[in-house]
Amino acid sequence: MYEQSVATDVSTLLVAGTASHVGKSTVAAGLCRLLADRGVDVAPFKAQNMSTNARAVPRVGSDGFGEIGVSQYVQARAARVAPTTDHNPVLLKPQGAGESQLVIDGRVVASVAAGGYYDDHWHRARKAAAAAHARLADAHDLVVAEGAGSIAEINLHHRDLANVETARFAGERGSRECEDRAVAIVLVADVERGGVFASIVGTLELVPDDLRDLVCGVVITKFRGDQSLLDSGIREIETRTGVPILGVLPYDDPGLPEEDSVAVPPSGTVRGAVEGGTGDDATVTVVVPRLPHIANYTDLGPLEAEPGVRVAYRALDARIDDADAVVLPGTKNTVDDLLALRDAGFGERLRSFSGPVVGLCGGYQLLGERLTNAGLEGTGDDDSIEGLGLLPIETRFSPEKRVVATTLRLDSETGPLRGVHAEVSGYEIHQGRTRATGPVETPFAPLDGESTAALGAARRRIVGTYLHGLFENRAARESFLASLFEARGASRPDSGGSGTGTPYDRAAALVAGMDVDALLAAVGVDG
Image 1 (cartoon, helix red, strand yellow):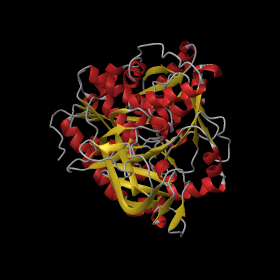
Image 2 (cartoon, one colour; image 1 turned 135 degrees about the vertical axis):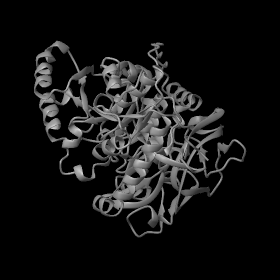
Image 3 (tube, rainbow, N blue to C red; image 1 turned 45 degrees about the vertical axis):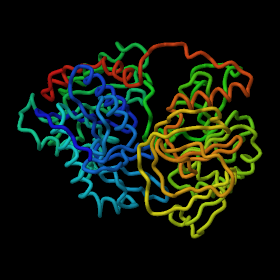
Image 4 (tube, rainbow, N blue to C red; image 1 turned 180 degrees about the vertical axis):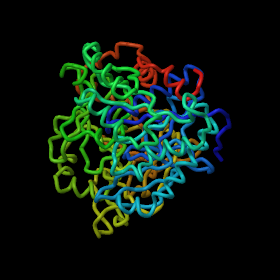
């Protein structure tokens, strides 16, 4: 059973925003690593998250595993603490048709529309969030809580769990006054969007009265150019509001996984080598069909980060014959996405494609011969639906959901991972169990068991697996990419050995330009 350790003298810093996608997750992760490096016992927290990108982590008070949003998983690693369900006690995972899967304390409790969540589940969610925060606050010197969207959504203030309610239940824990208060709020504003000063003033004007004095400063993000151009505006804002601007952070991407719905790559997006200016003669292209219910697309992040690799997210009816490989990503609705692929003629084009094909989680299910008990997954009435037919496997859906962090043995003699004999770590989050229906290699096995199609299967140029995070494993990633460059007859570009550190370290270096000491003083933590 997983239990938290206990410490004393707790404070909470809420990283709130003027809008969505202003850089809250990056600032929170950077602060977690920066403060951990200073010797502060810090832990991340987000009361309520909405994301299709999740990770499997230990459930507090249980021997099992549960789901949290990827950003809190990343922030926990940045803080050098073991991620648990307390770091993100409420998770909403959009699954289409206006509904989301509601996960509380790591476990799915319902599929809900927005109205149903607030009417029937919100009070339970708030109670779970407050309890999780209390456990973290008892175990750490500082809780870095990430807000959601804007803290100034006046139509949502009465049920804003990630911002307003987090500040309130965090504040209820402390008895310290003013400079040594139990909770402080730092506001993050994005200058790239334009109107940054108006957004700061407007947000401070609309923050609930009981929270306004908790705002200890503002951080401006994503600035390009000469920062002195902002000086007069900064002085005016500080005079008008009495809130200091703690720093102006340059535009930079430290390489942390994204999770917000606004960050899901649209069709036509190309990431990786093109952004780095690598020439076509030294690149390979991995095509990813942009599924309507795409999930855990961060599985492709390790490929996007490799020199000479372009990851192209394409519409379902787009060409794939120019690709060096195709990766079918995870999906929140395998059945409906299969029907969308069929309507677009994707299956015929994939069967004609001569290069490597990889299916991850839902993508693995799509590659099989059929999906049964399909009514539990999709919105239609069919019990059995033919799959893409590239692997002799069948998946039967059931109400139970498998959520587990795992390490497997990979021994592959065929397909895109041919020649890999290594342990690979990652996680599983899926409904449905898969079995082989014909001769097929089963290269994935538990460390203490036999290989099985319930974990993955391969045949000739095709491989599929339930293991999220496959390409985070060097052995699997290197084998896959080596085969692509070899088939193209291209030399793989050198990474350059830049030695710029991990994404966590780069995020810490980014936020080091703000007045961190003022933040620590605001929450009464030495560091």
